[in-house]
Structure formats: structure tokens, C-alpha cells
Image 1 (cartoon, rainbow, N blue to C red):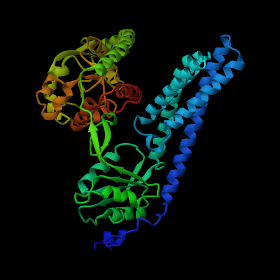
Image 2: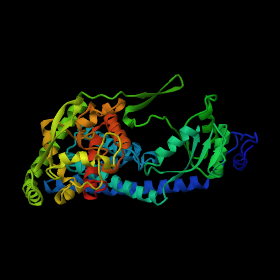
Image 3: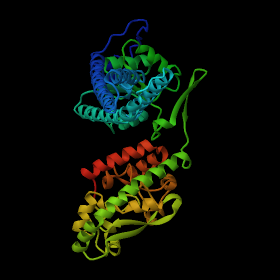
Image 4: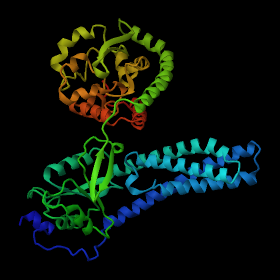
Length: 492
């Protein structure tokens, strides 16, 4: 028995009797208190926001001639049904708070169903007066609820960065799988603070108190109790124990601990995954990516609407930007460059010129100083960038003419980074999947580090976007792009 096993109390052969009531960990009590406190804040916020929306709708109906004695009960009924829907749809459940899009979807679904029930009820009862609630309270209230949830989520992420509202987490499984899950959980403020690792395939004594050897489900449950973990993440299960997960769940009964099993489906978005048990066998269905059809028609419509508005703004800004470019350095206002789009088709991409007029000719001399890896060339202190160009790049203003590329159908608002033909000639294997959809003015690469990203990280983000595109993801990227432009990081 190793020192680590002895420290963890393992290897003695003792097994906890599942019939014995497990003790509740202090960390679980603390987590439960924090979850209840946070849910209470959401409940109060929901009540205030929905109440303000229905009150505004009621006041509007009174101004249009409705009597207060009729408008007030309608507003009260709307508020009660709306708040009940938010509760019944689980919009304040701990597992959806602060991560992913499920929380927003539940708020939207609860709102839609609540107003649908109200509409049917009023129609059956042949009552009138709900129209103003539908016109005013529904759109304004839903938008305000989503914004409020986003603000609370921002607050929650800040608290997690300070070490609060994070669950002490134990990750168990084979060393390779445990390391992978640990790295993934470290990428975001997701509420999991990894405090210990339980390895099922090797004896490790290099980090006593954090890394343990655990052969069985009993061992892992005991480690969780010893280190004070209230969340267990199973990175992989032993090959010779098909009842491993069920046995571990039994060990955790009555503790309120959270048990999570990693699927190892890397970079597959939640909406593409569904679970369907068949004869007691849980099967995970993964939806194959589709690059045609109604969803991409909707994407094109979104591109046209946003780019049409943006082109109007660009037209107003162009005279001032053009004058600054001309005064700063000789050469044209616009920079035209061949890029590769969907299915490998080349197109001419437009940008405001941010470099000297001889930048292309000077490129060969700068190649040895390339700061990038792979086929992507980037230089942190590029001497070809002009003074005005440095300002334009810092706030991504040089990319504004690309909205005209979107109108022409060459590009999309969101998508993979548009590559040069020379880059594509060096593509290998899976990297070609970047060309399955139109390149974007912005994308996950733009809001995740821009030029600071390595070649591998840039490819990974582009492929994640290609595989998991959705309207919700596009809207999220657009919103985060605005924030990046206001607080630029990694632009050079």
C-alpha cells in the first residue's frame, strides 16, 4: 500500500455499507446555501422585471380606454402565470444557472408557454384585454428577463473568479482521461474547482493530498468525503466494472453530491446531443452537422439584415476614415486581397488599408520573423502597419468594408477566419473543414484572443464553429465582438 493510498484510507479492503446513512459534507451545506441564495435573487429579479412589464402594459391599456378595474386583474393574472411558468420550467435550477444556453432557453420557453396559456384561457372564457399584455409585456418583459439573467451571470462569473460559488470537485478515472477533463474545466468559469484527482489505473504519490489511487467506486466515494468534494466528475470508468457508475451513485445517496459523467464528446454542442435509453442501455445520439437547409437560409437572412444596416453606417464613416488614411500615407483607401471562401472558391476581400502601399512586396523579407505557427503569418510589431492603420486595427475598423462582401454573398457575419490561398495550399486533413461554410467577419477566433491565438487554437475554434453553428451562437459572437472592439485584446 502506497503512502497516498494510506493517506486516503484506501487499500484496507473495507467497504462502506450502502445501507448506512452517509454524512452530509460541510461543503455540500455551503453549496446548497449559496444555490438557494442565488436562486432567491433570481426569483426576486424575475418578479420585479415581469411585474414592471405587466404594469407598463396595464398602464398603456388604461391610457387607451380600459378601466383600471379590468386592467389590474389581467395584469395580476399575467404576472402569476408568467412567474409560475419560470418556476415550472426550471429556469432557476442550479445545473443551468451560470453556464450554457439552457437557462436562457428555459426563460424563453416558459414565457412563450405562459402567454400561450393565457391567450387560450382568455379566448375560451371570451374575455378581452390581453392584447396589450401580448404587445407590450411579452417582448419587453422577455428581453428584460434575458438581460437580467445575463447580468446575474456576469456577477456569478466574477464571484467564481474570486473563489466563491464554485463546487469543490473530484475528478476520477484513468490518468489520461482525468488530465483531459481537468484541462477542459480550467478553460472557463464554470463553477467547478478541481481539488483532487482519483486515478483508477496507476499509483501516483507525486502530489499527496491531491492525487489518489482509487480502485473501486467505494474508494472514490471515500476520497470525495476525505477531501470535501461535493461534485464528482467521472472522466472514465474501469473496463472490468460495468456497474461502476451505479455503485458510485449508491455511495452518494443522501449526500446531495453531484455526480457527472464525462462523455468525451469534445467540441460537440449540447443541442446536437440527446440521450435515449433502450432496454436500460443509455445511448447518446449525436446529430450529424448539416451545411444546407432552412437553418442556413435563416443564417443568410440574418447576414443580409445586419450587413444592410452596417453598410449604411460604414458609408457614413468612410469619408473620415478615407481622409485619415490618405493624409497618413500614400496609396489607395481600400485594400483588396484574394481570400478563399466556401468550398474553396476564391473572392476579393475588402478592407480599409492599414499598411503601407508596398506591404505585399515587403512580406518576403519579414517571413523569417514570423510570430505565428503553421501556415498563418502574423507579426506582433509589423513595421508595415501605418499610424492610422494601427488605430483601425486596434478597434477592428479596418474590417468594416467586409460587410459589402457579406451582401455579395462571399462572406458571413460570423464564421471561420477567411484564409489566404497560400495558407489553404498548406492545409492538411481536418483543417479543410474550415471551408465547409462561408468565412466570417468575426467568429470564435475573433472573440477568443484574435492574433494572440496559436495556429492550433485558431483551427480548433473554427472547426468548433463549423460543427456546431446555430443562430444563438451567431448572436452570442456578435455581442461578444462588440465587447472586444470596445476593449481590444490581441489586435495587431
